[in-house]
Image 1: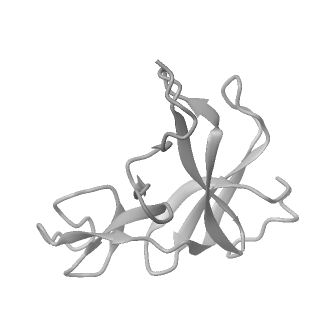
Image 2 (image 1 turned 45 degrees about the horizontal axis):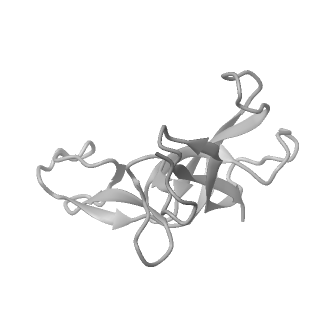
Image 3 (image 1 turned 30 degrees about the horizontal axis):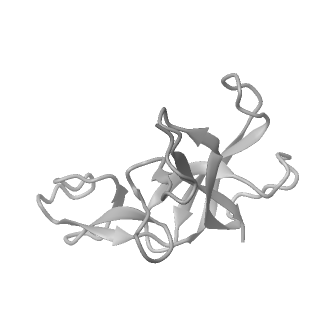
Length: 141
């Protein structure tokens, strides 16, 4: 049974939070012992080994391009080429996603370039019930 178009979209990953009021954001977990930030809930810090010291934290929506790859072959229905990127967010957290709003041309993409996190429809994808998904992307800041 398809939901109506006014329904709240579903997040594509569990670390994308869509509050009832306010803007979507990415959530990490920060170690109170060493300050390291990770995606996904965990009970032990991967850096210092502290147990039960991780707390949820809203990740920054600004960062810097760490590395990227221009993808020319993908699954059927996925438009290529696209830019797959890893971004270091300000304040901690490293996230993989697609870089949009720039030509997939190495001459135009620079390591370390500032990017921002944007939230958009997940390329028209829907679940079996017709619910849409919200995804995150990076674009040049």
